[in-house]
Image (cartoon, helix red, strand yellow):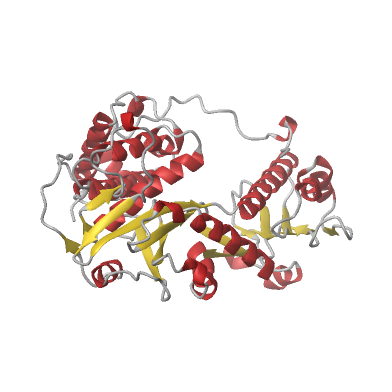
Length: 443
């Protein structure tokens, strides 16, 4: 995809400040104060720091904290301030939950996933590895012990050849073994729309900042629009047109795109202070957004509508079904089996300024369209993985929705149902493997 050229780049020069020290090097009290963790904050931070030190020892990569890479490295350097601290604390907590409740002899598979989190080949591999660990930790908090790759025989060794297929996790409840396979759902049509949206926003914002122009731009960009029909919206010609004329609108000609692409722009209103807003002028200008108050660095209003319709929902469901179908071969057909679903987008744009949780939007479609279909009798249910990794410690960072298949050939055992729905926990007495003893935070 083409992007705005270098002469559009009006970003400030790169900072000459030295890189921010890693999480392990910073003072625990300073981190706790920045994140407003309260009186026990420094102790919580120290525990998390110590936990990660043991993680680096486990994966034999003690170089990483001083030269972090990948998405986790951004959080390690604290690019998000307090939110990066919350991110590291939440991930540490769920990792600790999995590691203390994992069955003996599975250190290799945990270590592999941790290594991928620290040094991923790309963002998708990072997300897949982290999600697998998070879901394992969430299951372990309700049912333990958790078995990793439960269908791989204990006697198997790499020298034996290709590893036998197995779901990611298994748990033993009184009724028997239940398996869980994790997958990250990627809806490419929405991902392509999201990339085009970001490119348009970046190009318009840079051009307006360079020219000192304030506009309120609204775009209707249906999901599935071909790139060649959208490229004009991030071109110099369009950006200059928006800057040169106070208001206007355009629409694609018939046949250029499956659905019309529209763009309109108006002046971005600015009022001296919140007490002197002319609401009649706001209404005449099409409503929100507007700016109020002094010291406004750049005034740029931008909204985009994906125009989601029934065809888009059907396309999303088809993509989701493909993700689920690919996991069928990993199971044992004689055992209850679940697929835990995470999404590369935790929220979906539903309108110009409206977003919905991905599983609030598409979870009901699984109930309505998949469960009545006999093709999915092999599946006992799905778990919808929701996360807010930057949630403060007082808020809920992780949650798994339980979505059972009422027509499953092998329903979920009652013990597991009660655990997944929060009615009870089930933890067998067993000999724990050696794990790091430091806890990331009090429970």
